[in-house]
Amino acid sequence: MEKTYSFDLSGKNTFRMKVSCRCFIEYDSIADLIDIDFEDLLRPVKHIGAGSNILFTEDFPGTILHSRIKFIERIKEEGDEVLVSVGAGVVFDDFCAWAAGEGLWGPENLSHIPGEVGASAVQNVGAYGVEAKDIIKTVFCYDTLEEEMTRFEASECGFGYRDSIFKHEGVKDRYIVTHIVFRLSKAPAPKLDYGHIREALGDKELSPAAIRETITAVRRDKLPEVTDLGSAGSFFKNPVVPEDIYNKVKAVVGGDVKVPAYFLEDGLVKIPAAFLIEQCGFKGRRSGNVAVWDKQPLVIVNATGRALPDEVITLENKIRVSVREKFGISLVPEVEHI
Ligand code: EPU
Image 1: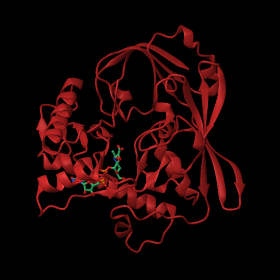
Image 2: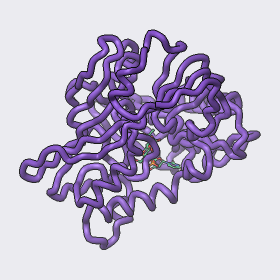
Image 3: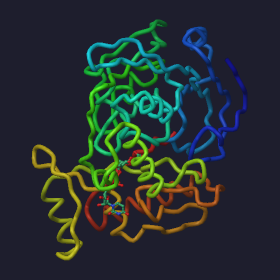
Image 4: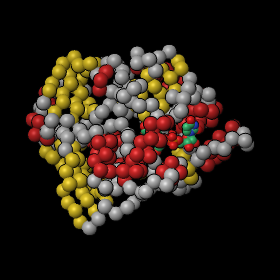
C-alpha cells in the first residue's frame, strides 16, 4: 500500500487536469483495503478507477483511493458458461483481451473502452449494443460502514443507462468494489446489430478476437486515444426525450436532414447528443486549450495538454446553452465532476 500527501493527479485522470489531492492511497489487496482506517482519513474521500470518466474541477481537499487489486481467475464452468472473477484494479480492456484470447464470449464489444473493472460496474459502461450489466453476475464490495465484505447480485445493482446504485447517495461513499464475477460463454453469442459493426467485420470469421479487433479499429478511428490526447470519452449522456420533443428537433433541422433516433418504450426517443452538438456548430470547434473532437462531438478534448478545468466547464456550458436554446433539450454530463 502506498500513501502520498500533496499528490499530483495529472497522471490519474485521462483528461490530464493538473490538480492535486491532499492524500492519495493505492492499495494492492482486499486485506490492505480492510486495513485502512476510514475514520482516520482526510475527508472527503473519493475512490477512483482509471480516472477516465472524471473531470477534476479543482484541487481535491481530501483523500483519493485507488485499487491495484489485479487478478483474472476462472472460478467455475458449467456447460458453456464460464464464471470469471476479476479484480477491480484490472484495466477493463486487459480483461476483454484475456477473454478474447481464451475464446470466451461476452466482453468483446466493450473492447478498448478506457477504465478499470471496478468502475465498469459503477458506471455500467456500454458500447456497441452491450453494457457491463449484460455480463456481470456478482459485484463484491467492501462495506466501509460495517467494515466487512459484502456482495450484490446483478439484479440488486440497479443497473441503467450509465447508472447503478453505486453512483447514488448513501451507497457510493459506503461500498468499494473489490472484484466482479462475470458470466462469459464458450458458445458463440455475437452482437452485431449496433451501427456498422456487421459491415465493419466484413467476411471475417466470427470469433471474440475478430469482433474485438474490429471494435478496437472502429473506436480508434472515431475517438481520441486517451494515451495521446486528454479526454474523458463521451462528455454528455444521450438524451431520452418524449416524441413531441423529437418532432420539434426534426422541425428545427428541416426536412432534408435525417434525425438519428432510437425508439424506446413508453413513447420515448433517445437522440444522439453528438448529432445535437454537431447541429449547433460545435463539431471540431477549438476554444483556448480545449476543443470538441472533430470525428465525435460528444467528446471534449484537452487539445494542448494545458487545459484548465474552467476552460472545459466554459465549453461545456456553451454547448448546453446552445443545445437548450436550439432544441429545448438539456444535456446532462456523463463525466463526473469532482
Ligand atoms: N453522430 C453525429 N455526428 C457525429 C458523430 C455521431 O451526428 O459526428 C450521430 C450519428 O447519428 C451516430 C450517432 O450519433 O449514428 C451515434 O454515434 P456513436 O455510435 O459514435 O455513439 P454515441 O451514442 O455518440 C455512445 C456511447 C459511447 C460508445 C458509443 C458506441 C454514450 C454517452 N456514449 O456514443 O461511449 O462508445 O455509443 O456504442 O452513451 C463513453 O461512454 O465514454 C463512450 C465513448
